[in-house]
Length: 258
Image 1 (cartoon, one colour):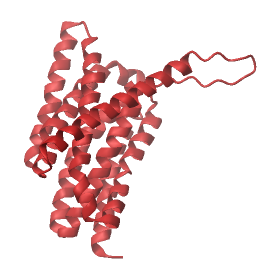
Image 2 (cartoon, helix red, strand yellow):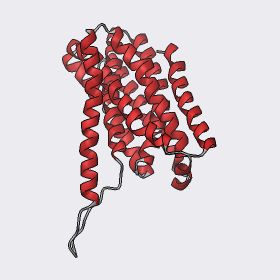
Image 3 (cartoon, one colour):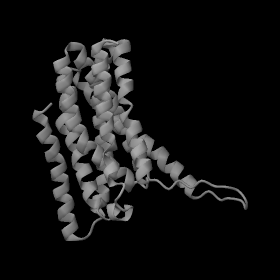
Image 4 (cartoon, helix red, strand yellow):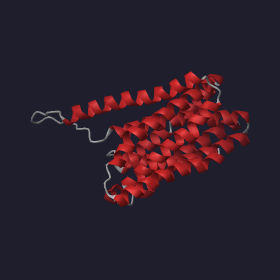
């Protein structure tokens, strides 16, 4: 097997393993984790907005795609996630109000639509990351290694916040780990796409990045910020605001690494 391909696959596998960061919480009671969830929601809101405005949007813009196309891609991300959440909420309500006849087994949806939105958004993001890593190694191994390190450092805070949000959405810790890993493995599809159609993927990448930014903006503004407004205690509100700033600051700090 070509050494460049081996480097690429090993790098993507290493990035995907980061999604299992939540495994360190398996010994912690879920009730304890959920009691501090407001802190994680603040961090996640800041991280998603910071990622969108500090990393993804500038990256897509610098790729030189036409201004209107760039804007439409962001709006498409927002509208797609809006429609997806509409469908998920409808399905959620239908499941909650299902009437079962005696002796029949009924399934009632217990998770919030936010969990699915996180998985989908992260999946698109990881697909792009996989393609970017493959493209970097195609240029040179040192560039591929540097790109992998940058993606790795970027993924650590992202995966921690994703795991926390999946728990907040009603997922058990094991289920949250599984779906976090599943969305992370989508990066291999990005590698496969690049190896299959090469330059065509590079043309689509900026649009996919802008689309992902739109999705992250929607999740943060439509789901997480309203959750933060539900906190009435002044002390907790101050902690939440600080968490949002920290989430943004982490993404800003990673700017020089990319």
